[in-house]
Length: 418
Ligand SMILES: *Cc1c(COP(=O)(O)O)cnc(C)c1O
Image (cartoon, rainbow, N blue to C red; front, side, top):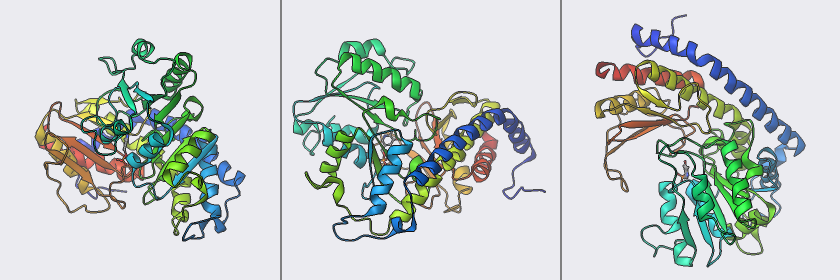
């Protein structure tokens, strides 16, 4: 059956078919990971006896909200951690990571970021730049950093030099964020964890796990003490409308809960206002949806590789997150690419994204996002600052069929520039 709803030319369509053939073995690998993680999830739902009563909306203090407690327990089980704190009231990934940092660090402590400078929005939290905004620095928490090596990999020798027996926190960011460094795999995180514990046995190894959930068959839960992420990325399955999670060692999760609410009440309070059903449903779907996003990324990588562009990761490379970077080399292509992604989005397909001076960036940025949830990046989205090396970062895709169509339309829109 002819399914050319979007006017894809025969050239792009043929390249698409060839790319699909190249990508297929790797897409099949994704299916194996997805199946494992999905069954682990189903098993956690069974073990925690999820029932409709978990969806009851609590109000006020939220004492005894069974759904809230069961969801925490499911996260702990699928992430291989002792405990978890999953709340719709985490306003963003940055908020969640901030609660975790303030929850466990105390004045005089030193945190060492061992994967270079953290994600943009965390820099203000740490107090790089202005310190007078309630940052960690203003509360007397010291920050040190081990840069990545020039090729973007972890500098283990540098870690040896920087981490001392009294280092309180070793901080790891898994995902590349909007850089071109490789994303860490769980085996890399394990190596850092073991080294950190050798150098500072009492330290807290904390992981920014954004975009990394359910991408691999293993969870990093056993090779960090604390991790956090956003529910409008992988773990919310495209259904959670907001929220975040913290998971890890029981004593540390408890300390975070005291920061989220109050010392003493911690996890015991916090009403769920009817959000539980969507949080459960999104959580349940998350391994599958993450797989769909991965397939979309692999297909994009294969197609743009065959169009002659540098892609990272390559379609045949192992992945630690759902992000695909494509070096499009000039402005016209970036704009056309983002406009193509937007045009094949379920929401706002008729909108034409334009570059704009986004606050906090030193160059114009163009973004494509046609999502059910504002800012959701488990839904297909693409971002590109208009500067060297003219790379676009693409992520998400609720289902591979529509993700693949969007990637083809992006290539089609770029056609006159390639
Ligand atoms: C998205 C992200 C964050 C922050 O999440 P927001 O929801 O944007 O605040 C932090 N770290 C990494 C690596 C991310 O990808």
